[in-house]
Length: 91
Image (cartoon, rainbow, N blue to C red; front, side, top):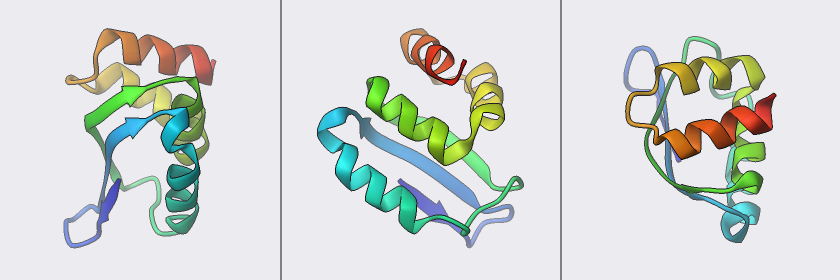
């Protein structure tokens, strides 16, 4: 996951596997980003790898229910299985 603040608007790229095996490092990294992005920040899910319920819950925590709901509807490269899992978790 990277936050590109050189672009306008800033872009938060969600990358890699968001799974229980990576939860501790992802949680630490998401915590370090707190306050560094806002509602104008563009979110990219194109490079999201494997996703399980732990990772989906962390994404809900990171992005919020409303923002994640919007993203799951508009992200063209998000596989249907990931979309369904995210929707189940944020609902």
